[in-house]
Length: 144
Image (cartoon, rainbow, N blue to C red; front, side, top):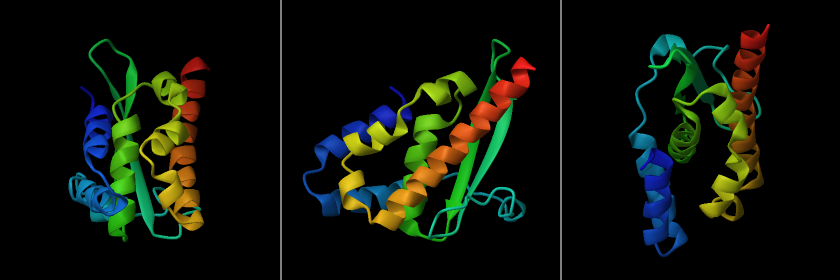
């Protein structure tokens, strides 16, 4: 099972939003630490109320295809958890796989969309857009 499948299963076992909220915060504690140098303007995600940084590292997988590995951080515990969910959806995938993911549907399926403030929802969209832009840019670069 993938990391996002594990998160979906865990969410399904939680009965109320308060438990899910605490779980999202716990997910944020599982993020791989982001170096101080990675907290830079190039990695900063625009459109988030909280401070959010996403570091993207393209790597070649076993069959020579490029995958994108993400690390992230935020000054908000809840947002760190949302980053962990986005990383579970997108990290270690090819640009084509990333572009095929319907992340908005995945967040809706977890029930997050109706429980986030409009500002947090905009931040999630900004993170998803950033990851999709990374994938699209790499894919276009590979086609040139």
